[in-house]
Image (cartoon, each protein chain N blue to C red):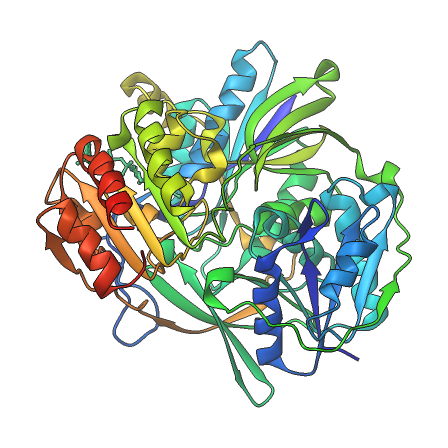
Length: 251
Length: 320
Ligand SMILES: Cc1cc2nc3c(=O)[nH]c(=O)nc-3n(C[C@H](O)[C@H](O)[C@H](O)COP(=O)(O)OP(=O)(O)OC[C@H]3O[C@@H](n4cnc5c(N)ncnc54)[C@H](O)[C@@H]3O)c2cc1C
C-alpha cells in the first residue's frame, strides 16, 4: 500500500510568540521551526502501520518555502521513503492547502492519507476535512487509534470527540487526522538522519500544479491578545478561602 | 430570508448551551438566522431550539442521521444552504462542528474562520477575529467567498436568551445516499460522569502531572463534589491515562471560561493557558513558586497540593 503523510513546518511550539507592532504578523527574528507536532504523530503512525507487517511506501508531503525541506528531512529520518515539497511563497489558507493536497493525491494515488489534526501555528483544524470533501473520501479526524481491517481495505479509527471516544470504520482510500494520543513519535537516530539526506525530495513549484491558489480569506491585521495580570500569592489556605469568599465572591 | 445558518448541536434530546453562543454571534451579523437540527427523532430538540428568535428551525431527520457521519451530515447541510441561500454558516466550536463545518465549506469552495473570538461588523464588511499560535496572536480576517463559514468559540459570546416568540419548525428533506459515505459507525464509548459538563461548569478544578496519579485526582474529586465543579486536566495528566481524553484543557483540547478555575499541580505551559485564561478567577496551587501558572493566577498558593486540597476542603466546609 501507499501512505501519504503531511509534514508542515511550524514555529517551535515552545517559543514565545510576539505580534509585530505594526500588526502585519508575528516577529520571526530568531524563531526556530519544527515539524508540526500533530504531523509528527501522523508520520509515526505511518511507520507503525508498516512495522505491523504491512508492505507500505510512505510518502511525506509539505507545503511552504524552500526551508520547509528541513521538516521533510525530519520525517525522512524518522523513516518515510521520499518527500514532496510544494513551493509556495504567497499567502495561502486551508482551502489552498486542500486543493494542493488533492492534486498530489491524484498523482500519487495513496491508499491512506495521514495528517495532523491541526497545525500549531494557525490552529485552523480545517485542511484534512476540506481535502476529504474535495476528494469525496471518507474522513476520520482526531484519531487516537488506527487499525487496518478487511485485509487492508478498511481502517477502524477511534476518534477523540466530546464526551468520549467514537469508533468508526472507513473504506480506504480515506483521510485520517491524528490527535495527541495516537502515539508517541520516535526520535530519529543519527544514522537515520544521515540516511535521510540521500532520500529523494522532489520540489514542486505550486504554479506547475495548474490549480487556482487564490485564498478564500483575506488577512486584515494581527493584534495582541488581552493579557492577564498576575494576581497575588496567598500565604495559606485560610487566606485563599477568605479571598474567594469576600474579595472575588466566587465561593 | 435569514442570512445566517447555525448548525445546532444536541445530546440525549437536550439542546447544547454552546450553540446559544453562536446565536449571539449571528445576531451581531444581523439579517436574521435560522437553525438546523440533524439526527433521528429530533423534533423535540428542534422545538426547544425554537425559543431563541430563529426565523426558522430546520429539521433534518431520519435513520441516515441517527449517528453522526461527517459525509452524510455535510451533504445534507450543503443542500439546505443551497436551497435557502445562506450567506454565513456557523456552529459553536466543538469536536462535532470542527469535524463537520470544514467539510461543508469545501463543497462551496469557501473560506472558514475557526474558533472565532469576535465578529466585527461595519457596513457590509464582516471581520472575524480568531486565535493563532495558541491564542498568542489574534488574526483578523475577512472571508471572500460568497458563503462564509465559521466555528464560534462559545466562551467569547454570551448565551442568547429566549426571545419570547416561537420559531416555525420545518422539515427539510435532504437527499442523502448513505452508501456513498463509505463509513460505518461502530460505537461510542461514553465518558460517564455525574458532574457538570467541563465547558459549561461554573467551577472547574484541573489537575496536572503534579497530581501524580489517579489518587491525586481522587482528592480533586472531593473538592469538585463540594463545589459542584467539573474536572479538567493538563495534557500530561491525560497522556498518563489518569483521566479521560476529553478532559484536556488547552490549545488542542477544551476551551473553558468558568467563574472559578483551580489549577492543581499544573505548570502553566502556553498550550494549557490557551484553554483557561478566559476564566473569571484563576487559582493556582503549585509547589514551585516559579511555575508560570502563577503569572495568570489571581490567587497563587505555593504548596503541596496533597496537603493544600484537603485543607481547602475542610476550610470551605467550615466556612459554610
Ligand atoms: C502540540 C501540543 C499540544 C498541546 N496541547 C496541550 C493542551 O491542549 N493542554 C495542555 O494542558 N497541554 C498541552 N500540551 C502540553 C504542554 O506543553 C505541557 O507539556 C503540559 O501542559 C504540561 O502539563 P503539566 O503542567 O501537568 O505538567 P508539568 O509541566 O510537568 O508540571 C507539573 C507541575 O506540577 C507541580 N507539582 C508537582 N508536584 C506537586 C505537588 N505535590 N503539589 C503541587 N504542585 C506540584 C510542579 O511544580 C509543576 O509545575 C501540548 C503540547 C504540544 C506539543
